[in-house]
Amino acid sequence: MDRPTTALAQVDIDDKYTRKHGRVFLTGIQALVRLVLTQRRRDAAAGHDTAGYISGYRGSPLGGLDLQLERAKAHLEPHHVVFQPGVNEDVAATACWGTQQAGLDGEGTHDGVFCLWYGKGPGVDRSGDVLRHANLAGTSKLGGVVALLGDDHTCESSTTAHHSEYAMVDASIPVLNPARRGVVVTDEPDFRLEFHLAPPLLARRDSNTGEPRKGRYGTWMMRVFAVLSRLRGLRGTPLDPFGYTAERRRERRLIERYERVMSRCTGGLDHANHAIAVEIASLPDRIRGFGHVKARSIEEAERREADLLARFAAVVDSPGAA
Image 1 (cartoon, rainbow, N blue to C red):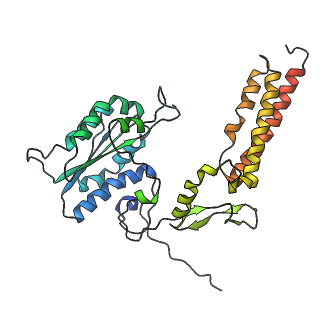
Image 2 (cartoon, rainbow, N blue to C red; image 1 turned 180 degrees about the vertical axis):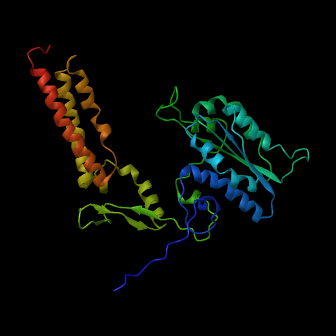
Image 3 (cartoon, rainbow, N blue to C red; image 1 turned 45 degrees about the vertical axis):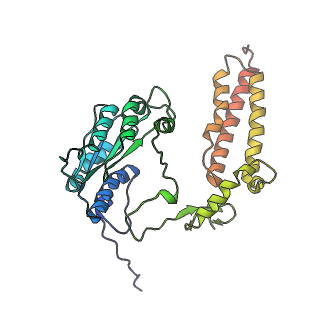
């Protein structure tokens, strides 16, 4: 018997920028590129002849953005979007400020200019004067500026760690963290928001692995999240309903175990076993994720702990140990 065949959808690598309906596959950085194209399309649909301008510093954690913008020039130019990297963040910010003044003397060639600026924490610091004054000056009627802050919270590529929201608050610039349905904007009429979750009380188990399987949940989950958020004060108290789950009980046992192990290590610590003790102390950093993913990382950490404790004890018991 012939097996039924399913027709494959026609897909093009440029769909991420050109397709106006349905689904597209794109990265977060590519979504920023699509953002300016979408803004231009929305303006055109409303009868406005606008243009776009993008500038920032290539050394920011959003460094991949300039690469994607260069690759997308064939899409940006027909939409009157100009990408001009700055020598540094404050020069780029000053240029963005200038785009909002292009029509003050009636010399503008477009109805307005929408703009993206991007930089990292040190760039926010050095651009504070520009950002403050640009915000106080305001934007043109059909313009606007979005500042993309690529903070280096763990100080991996910067001389200091950064948390730029405070700088924005100090300059009276509104901060947007797009992490919930209310701040998702789309130009696709058939857009649907779905959550792929494996809730502890609702998830079904995989018949082969016994692990929870993720299910698809609609926007009604936003109401559930809102209730859970209001009840977060119960966490750690006898009224916490999740505190009685096996996972949470295991977490409490791990804390007690860690305290015992650290007490044992500090009691026999010397120069010979110091490096081993440091690795033992850092084992909790290996425990990541939730549910069965977290359980696997705990098991791996416990195996490593057993090996390290054996080595630690061998050094302590050796005749040359001081």
